Amino acid sequence: MKLVILDRDGVINEDSDEYIKSVAEWVPIPGSLEAIALLCQAGYQVYIASNQSGIGRGLFDFDALFSIHERLQRAVAEVGGRISGIEYAPDHPDEVSEMRKPAPGMLKDLARRLGISLEGVPFVGDSESDIEAARAAGARPILVLTGKGERTKSKRKPDDVPIYKDLAEFARTIIGQDQRPHTA
Image (cartoon, rainbow, N blue to C red):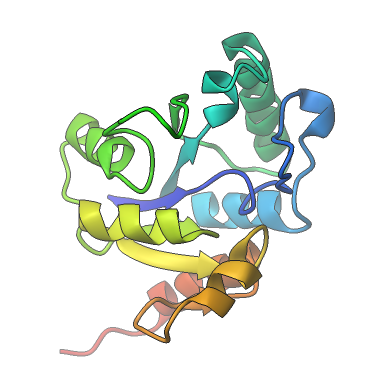
C-alpha cells in the first residue's frame, strides 16, 4: 500500500494563529488540492493527522470541524482526489495526550487500523511537532515551507528531514521518484 500522511493547517490550507474555526476561514493553499489529486492518481492513499486544539480551547465545536472536513473532502474530490481518512486530536495543549502531536498517537492509531508499519511512510508537516510525531511513530518526516514551515526551518539544525517549497513540490517529487526505473 502506498500511503502519504499530511498535516492539515499550513500544509493543505492556510494556517492562522487565530485557528481555522469555520468553513469560511478554510482557504486551500494554491496547488495543495491538486497535489492530493496527483498523489491519489499515482496510487497513494492520502490520510490527514491534525491537532485541532481549538476544540479543547472552546473556540469551535465538533460540528464546525466536521463541516470544514466535509468542505475539504468535496474540494479534493472536485479536482479528482480523495482523502482516505482524517485523524484529529481535539485536546488542549495543556492536557497530557498521547494523540496530540508531537506524541505519535494519531499516527500509531492510523497504522494499527490499517494493519501496517509506518516505516518509510512520508508524514508531511510544517512544524517541529509534526517532525517529532513522525519520528516517534517510525514514519519519514517531511517539512514544507508553507504555513509555519519557514519559521520551523529557521529554528532547526540541518538534518535528514527533506524540505519542499509546498505540498505540490513534494507530490511531484515523490511521484517522479516512483516512476524512475528501479535497479537491483
